[in-house]
Amino acid sequence: MLTACSLLPPGADAPVARRVSALLPVDALLLGEQHDAPEHHAIERETVEALVANGRLAALALEMAEEGRSTAHVAATASEAQVQAALGWNDKAWPWASYGPAVMAAVRAGVPVVGANLPRARMKDAMADVSLDVQLNGEAYTAQQDAVREGHCKLLPESQIIPMTRIQVGRDRAMAQAIVKARQPGKTVLLIAGAGHTVRTLGVPQHLPDDIKVASVRLLASSTNDAVPGEYDRTWQTPPLPEKDYCAQLRRPTKAPAAS
Image 1 (tube, rainbow, N blue to C red):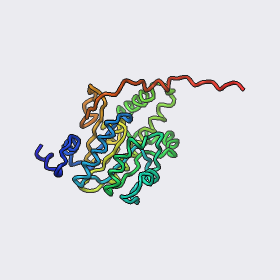
Image 2: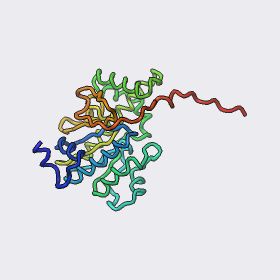
Image 3: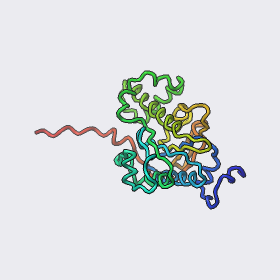
Image 4: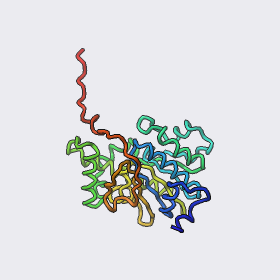
C-alpha cells in the first residue's frame, strides 16, 4: 500500500486514482466497459486524468476508433470537432457525449489518442482468414466461439460462428498491436474497450508479447460479481443499470415491405 500511495501525485486521492495507482507500474492497462453504463465513462475519464497527473500516460487506445486513426498530429488546443475528425469518429455507434471527456482529457494533456479497432474495410478479409483460428489455444478458441454465440443472442446461423469469431480475434489482435506500437518505457498505454475484449484468457492480453506487463480491469454495472477467476485482474463494480433485454431488437421480426 505504501508503494501504491507513493505513486499518487499531490491531491490525486480520488477513489479511481487510488485504484489505478494500486495497479501500477504496468505497460498496459485495459479497462473493459459496459458500453451503456454512464459510470464507466466517468471512470475512464478519471483514469486518464490519474495517469496524466503522474506523467504515466503513454497513449489512450480506443476500440471506438479504427486502427490508423490518431490525434498524434493534433494540437492540444484542438476543438472537439477537430479531434473527432482525426479519429474518424462515428457518433451513432459511439456517442461522443460518453467518450469525449476521456478523449479530450488526453488530448489536452498532449497525449496521443489512437484508434485500435480492426478497420471495417478489413473485416471481410478477417472472416476468411484461417490463420486467425490458431491465434488462441483450442480451449480458448472454443470459449471465444461460445462468447460470439451469446453476444449475438444465439441467433447467428452456425455457419457464421467461425467467421464472426475470426473477426473478434482479429479485433483483439489489432488492439494488442496498437498497444505495442504506442508503448513507452516507464509509462502506461490505456485501452478502453468492451469487457469481452479485455478478458485475460480470451481477449487482447492473449495477443500481447510476454514482455508487456498488463493489468485488465472489468467495469461491472451490477450488484453481484460473476467474474470467473483469472479472467480479469480486478473488477470495479458500479451501480446496476435498469434491466434491459438487449436481444429484443434482434429478435424482432423484420416488417415485410408494403405492397405497391
